[in-house]
Amino acid sequence: MELKKALTYEEQVDRLEKVHNLTIDSKEDAISILSRINYYRLSAYGIGLKKKDDPEKYADGISLKTLYRLYVFDSRFRNILFHTVEHIEIQFRTQMANYLALKYGPECYTDHQFFCCVHNQHGDDVFQVLLDEFLMERKRQKNLPFVIHHNQKYEGHFPIWAAVELFTFGRLTSLYSILKKDDTKAIAEIYNTRYHHLKSWLLSLVEIRNLCAHYGRIYNMPLKQKPYLFKEYSQYQTSRIQKVFPVMIVMKLMLEKCKSPQWKSTYHELCALFEAYSNVINLSFIGFPDNWKSVLKPNDIDMYPGDTVKKASDEKVLNASKHLMERNLDVYSELSK
Image (cartoon, rainbow, N blue to C red; front, side):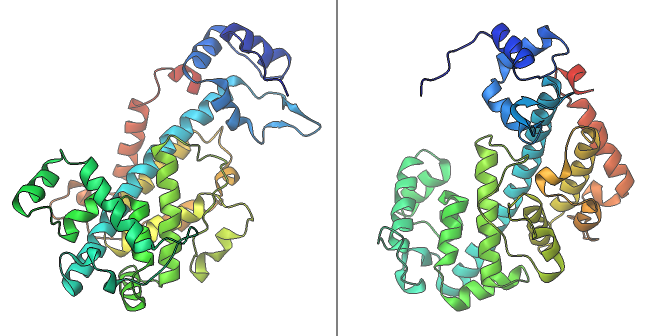
């Protein structure tokens, strides 16, 4: 099949309006949008917004502004998720490094006896693959201050609490998965869960983290990983198509179990974001139920000592989040009204 020919921005606008039934409120604004975000990326936000009897055409009333606002929503949602996963990743690195160092010593990650003998689909020893990847990353990051320090002062020996800084979240998850049963169980208990649950949580978080890091779409995106949820949350995982809401539950559980204040911040940011875009988003497209606020509502947790947020009421924090959202509206804010 022959590829479609390239079109100018003006030609794209005409085609979207005349052929695909996409409402164009302002050609000038439309050209501005398409010159910054190519339509191929924007078109993904039109999934579910086409006519059932003519999938080449958008439903009446759907405009380029609609797609653009969904894109902006997704971008901000992605930023919130990425920042939240960052806290969980660093938290997990800390918990795993501390546990293994205390039990087996600073360089335990280099000793196969502390890990199960597991082979990947190519027949390679997973432990050896992870160790080789660590050594390559150490070489690649040779100019980092802490790498220089350990190379010079300790002849290239890295304690696990330093080594984990060179492990990606995915590799750290793989390292956890090949620990011996007693160790996977002990680390899972830190999060008040079992090994198979925690492993599925980590894999789901790695997928979200990688989507966010590469500017992938979260809105209406089917996910590959399915986190195991506790019985009280099983009703939120009934769909055959995995969406992001179950992963939000995982984030809440992992952060609050370790008494991190981050979930409260994430929750208020979500409330402000969803309110700002309530007239354009479809909650079912991201797997959110109507009662999502009550499901994700933070428990009362202690903040860090001296944290000013500790003294603020939930209402004040929410208002601050709304104010921040308003201040950070896109430069094309008139399109988001």
